[in-house]
Length: 216
Image (cartoon, rainbow, N blue to C red; front, side, top):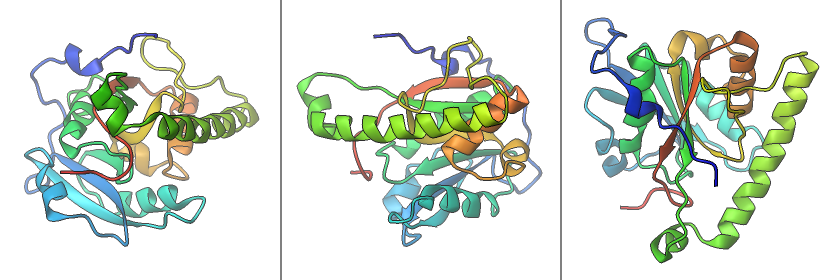
């Protein structure tokens, strides 16, 4: 299996993106059913992160895009993290995504699932779910490829030149708010297409997660 470069390991301990006084360092948009996130989920956000909960219509084809767009419109911090509450990503892992952006190492950081094959990993993310998630991601990859082809652009790649594929990613990312807010659409496909078109510096960071909504 191809190794994944961990951008968080290359960081210098300097916070280069200073927020205005009284503003959170990072706004974390959490797409959740009925716009509700349990208190214990919000409590897992790193220090200096403000949770922005956005209603998610899981039955709508563009439900995640709409939820992220609505949440992004309510953010004020210079760095924004976007998370699908169904992804199983622990909010504590958002720090690994947002800090490279805050420190100026990347414009956007995409989460990549750390999928083990031991018994514990298979219990948290069973094989049938892996197959279903992979099929969904392949469809998203095809739509992303069509989008960049229509625009006459090469596909998105990270700072090492490795192609970015949604089959490798989970619906969690972080980026500079000014860049994300300027994109027409806030879903993973639209943001990665904009990254390819704009020459953004994109990094990939592995995160721990299981299937479905967060569990204690």
